Image 1 (cartoon, protein in one colour):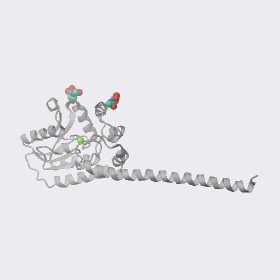
Image 2 (cartoon, protein in one colour; image 1 turned 120 degrees about the vertical axis):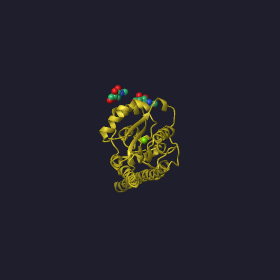
Image 3 (cartoon, helix red, strand yellow; image 1 turned 90 degrees about the vertical axis):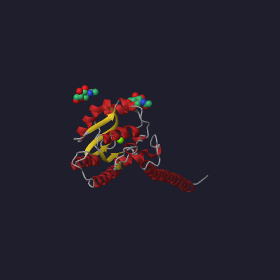
Image 4 (cartoon, protein in one colour; image 1 turned 180 degrees about the vertical axis):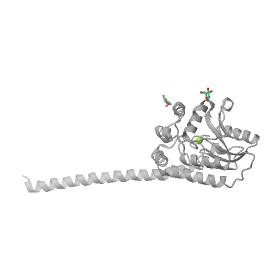
Length: 256
Ligand SMILES: *[C@@H]1O[C@H](CO)[C@@H](O)[C@H](O)[C@H]1NC(C)=O
Ligand SMILES: *[C@@H]1O[C@H](CO)[C@@H](O)[C@H](O)[C@H]1NC(C)=O
Ligand SMILES: [Mg+2]
């Protein structure tokens, strides 16, 4: 018969073994999760550089492994800071332009993710990891509640103050004109020279073609497009391009 004295140490050492194994596996689990997260952050930072520089070209959705990275980027300080630096670079150039007295020096702004932020909407769309849903997007636009991107609002006012005529060229549809005007005003934007939306004759073209045609029309009317600000390469490339173009960050979606 096993003595009481010999069973107790056996039980104790068994317990000890079990708990050691458990805590080891716990540590392994935590460290492997941490490693995955670190690897994802590293990869997603490189992915972000690739999409911002347009090296990636067309991409449809944010890779699912980058959802938390994109979320942290947009909801943390980094997005605001990046936008501020873009605005500073933009203003530095704008100040070098000699504004003529003819009122023909123009600046083109895109609207979504340039003047207005749709972050409240994209929070509900998993920060761009879900496919674009036009119905939900239209519902969101109808609310007219997109806030201003703070750095852009400040920049916009400075551009107007310098004497540029501002042209807002957006991929939004002509039928969204009233709500877009209302939203811009409530976000603090005023004094634009013209708000240009996609009309019936602009359907079925890419954003880059549509926006180029609108800039070419402005040039034809005698405007000198000194600068252009947009979050998409399609806001800035094509023809009748501005003297200088400024790309705002947008790791949520790509419009060709
Ligand atoms: C798009 O969103 C609407 C609601 O806004 C929903 O009814 C519809 O099922 C969604 N479509 C897809 C393809 O997810
Ligand atoms: C937009 O507003 C104007 C007046 O501000 C009005 O005449 C027009 O009917 C409105 N359009 C739509 C589509 O609501
Ligand atoms: Mg945009």
